[in-house]
Amino acid sequence: MRLACLAAVLLAAISFFLPRPAFAADLPIYDYQVVHAYPHDVGAFTEGLFYKDGFLYESTGLAGHSSIRKVDLATGEVIRSVQVPSKYFGEGIVDWGKELISLTYQTEVGFVRDFDTFAVKKEFHYVGEGWALTRDDKHIYMSDGTPDIRVLNPTTLNEERRIHVTLNGKPVTYVNELEWVKGQIYANVWQTTWILRIDPATGNVVGVIDLKGLKPADTSDDTDAVANGIAYDAKGDRLFVTGKNWTKLFEIRLKERPAAK
Image 1: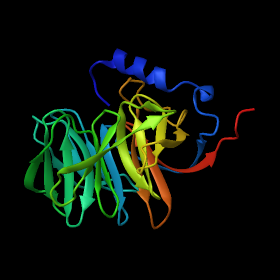
Image 2: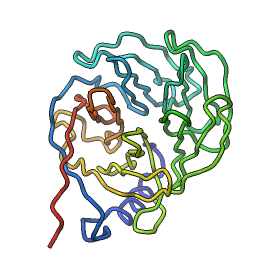
Image 3: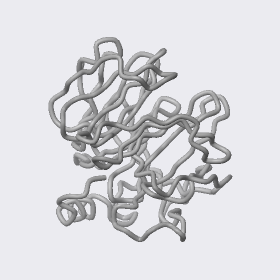
Image 4: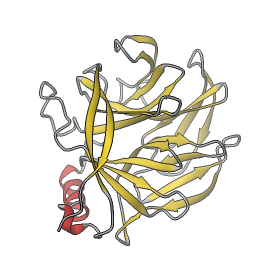
């Protein structure tokens, strides 16, 4: 995710995400099969992503370059876009009713927007960093780079409680982009190729998806061009993933890896 403190982040990531033997023996690991590859704007520093009614909605980051977009899945064409004011580093987005909610990184302010126009209707505030958003039918879920996922009231956007994310009994930092999939929270972990499958009732990681090798060969080898962006089409049961400044967005199918002997 972020541009600062990279060495510290990588060290933390390495400590939590070693090869398979570091995981509990009964923790499922999933590999992927690419079903389809779609074009993705290489200039999009992806921070948030979701699918709704045939379109992708994507937020991009970097101060002075942040935007919110409605994107045609098949062509990658941007149907609608709004620039986020340059003083903000844009972060996650989620839909709720006729509104779209967006976060900013370190400025402790989010925006409630008209879903159709992206025009700002009002702002709200939170303590700490804003990273990503997703939702189920009752709540909005927000990551902030810590092991805690905040559970927000969708009407007031006030925090109601937190989900403490743990893997093998240890807290997981740098929980990033989120997506609600079949009763679980899927979460990218910044600067890794992992997507965690999290039980929202307990915070326990109940599975890990390994995206190693998915990054397109024609994407920059810059250290910030990491996997980030998960969207789910519930009606079509399709899972989409991409990354920051990637040239492709992928529909993938998961397959559980055989247990190590």
